[in-house]
Length: 449
Image 1: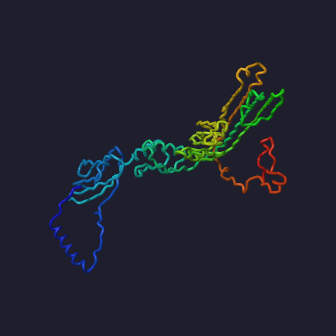
Image 2: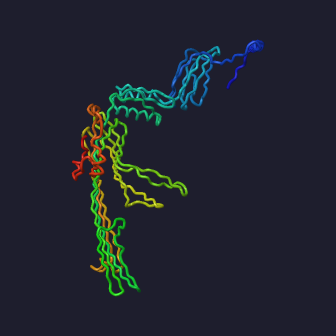
Image 3: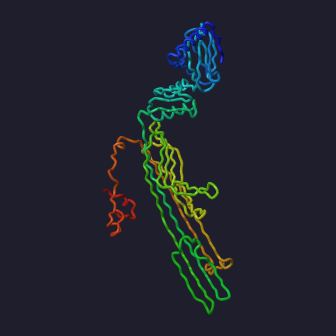
């Protein structure tokens, strides 16, 4: 800080004033006062970082003082003109003294992004859009009302090139466009399993022979068992034939409809969450939850030509106990996941299908007594065999369209369709539904109230 000498007559007068104040202190308490800065002209200038701008003063200046030279560099070109170079983001001020040594002006300097250059680029890219660019601290702010969401996204993308991760968008769309996405998800899962096992046990008081353990898959009990018990003298012979056959078809259908503003991401989940343990410390386990079911993430964007660009990511997952993991008597199921991700452009009302997500699994297992199980025909009495085949096919159909005034005029129903079963119908008649479920899925729609 640079100091300036004071004039002696002024100091003498200042001392006499202090004596007068001391004499008056006994009569009345001293009043506190706040020192204010000199009332001079103040103005603010904005300088882009790594650029220079030239300015002119209203009169000649004898001295210029900059508070933080590491933010802005001042270079005088004449007695009444200078240029400012932006060095670092921030704000400082500059004191200007006139020819008589008095403070004549205080100039606040703010170094930020090149708002003027961005304003010119946006005017060239979108000539009919009233977009305003302003420096706001160490960020750029976009303001104005644009015609569609495509202009909004384009302006924000251009601004991000000037100020990465430092853009505040206050742009609004004059006619906000909403996209309705109609999705149909169908999954068919077909499984077939056959398991057969033969047990033979021969024993008496001096020896014992046993082969086979029944079914290989011990989780599901056998559906049929044929057993014999007999022997000769003190020798006992027991045989048992166990068989199991399973067939099944599982169909999953989801029909979500999602509404989202153009340029905004939307998601949908129809399923649930299952808990699974996560080890943290020694002898300490916490519980977390993982989602499963039918999920849909999509990001729509209405283009200038009226088409809809969509980034779609559907996913179908279900609990899989065949690949479950057991830890400390806790069974954690695995997840069977089918997922797709794509970006495409469609006209409103057009549909596209993502099919071909087909999975075919086949497995077999044979357990037999060594040597005896390889004997033709009779070897079947000394082995157990199991095979399983499963097929899964997933079909996803997506139809985007623009929301209309008819969609906004839909009145919500006063109550959900269907009626609840009364206590007498539930306990005496066993009637749990308002209408019976049939084999035809089209006839299982909810009944109207």
